[in-house]
Length: 483
Image 1: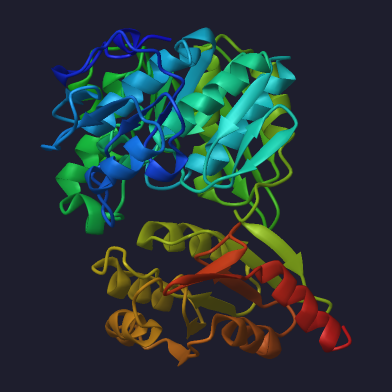
Image 2: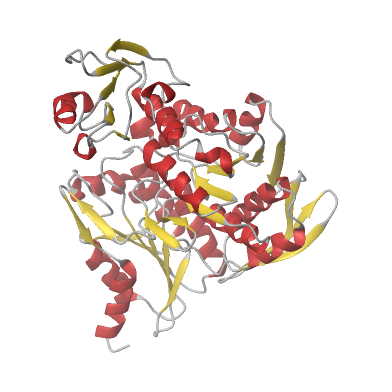
């Protein structure tokens, strides 16, 4: 493929060399450059690709795309652009012959509910006999193949590569979580979504976005790239999205009549029952996912599928066909008669959702094990402490993924919030020991909520990542106790 065929869709200025050169590949990591590659310099948060141009050329790069000044010999093509992230997205799509345009693309954005919503949509569409792929936090799924996920939404080149693999696998629909980071960093630039879905917006990622308005505007970008939308109008920001877009919108709600809404909601410890209603029809849903927030997730999935012309009969089959989602309200029963819930909740709203759900069916105490991630929004830490304290009988405050921060310092940020509530709490920095402590004090009919990591099987500590699977810790504890 010629370089000249890769540079449409973004501003570009040829500073040296020819754009008639043959291109064998694209890389944004200089270590992956091979003979005949284009190297796109990304200004990252820890390293800057512009510092590795010389290494890329030594490895065989025939062209460099940069947004800063770099010095090259005249036989190397240099293309300048104002935004190399956007350039990478458009070039990658062109290199793989625009694979996203060869299937239907459904994007889900919001603070909470993205993962569960994508799994529910996938199930509905598969019941409708479509070939469905998925991109998200837990894993990327192409046919029978599961690819570990590094980011909720991959970097644009990796995303387009996966789209291309999906096309080879005859994918009809790709359902993907679209994070605010990916939208702000142009990872999905140039992608046109058949449907954009908005779940909700609550505090998160302010370490990156700085202000809530920036956070909202990043989410809004998805709907500027969508043909139609499914929007939660119980969230004020859902209404704000509708005011800012000019595309067909299906609205959904749990509390009021809209295009799709729920009535007769009943929550138990292992399911959610409700009537899913449209203006023309209704169907009873028995969802194997407890919690009102999962009713919302079901409504968002149903809305997208109704927009695609899927019948309520198939929507019912699809929703009821999902037994569970990894790390989302995942239940392990103790031989001692208490329940353990593992959930990914890592925001104030996420903790409120899971603990309110537990509160609807818990017969005795709620024991919550939680912490906050390092190198992330510090302002939410005392808020998480306060909401956990208000909704728990006992809290055990511990480490999450501390990353480069000291775990004790993160916990100190949490404690002012929990101290407001008068909740009984303990601080146990080591997360394994904290989980074992909760399990050791659990009694019949208690519910122990272990929140923050969910599906993750690792813990990030300074410069290393260690194996850490909460399911294994729980099973080993029961085994060692002879239970």
